[in-house]
Image (cartoon, rainbow, N blue to C red; front, side):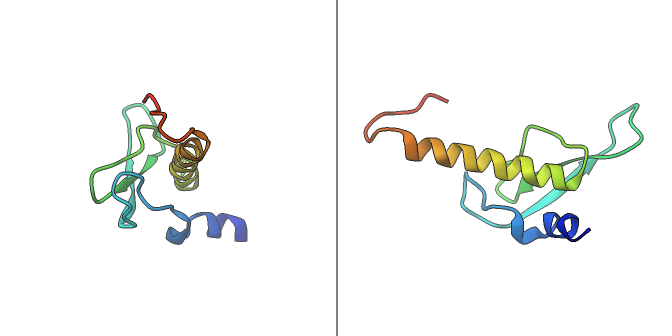
Length: 85
């Protein structure tokens, strides 16, 4: 139960990759035909996860994972080599 609560702590959401800001929040919607909401993280600059998740914790993990993977790729790239998006 403690891990679940820590997972939803807003301080565990990493800063936005686009603007570096920490003014992010969870957004939800209820798609037609579903009984439970789906979630994603949204930054005040408009940057958002394209992936919707079935729980708040999963949305935070997806946001953090995407930031971490892109950050790690930047570390691996050789200086002067442009990465393709």
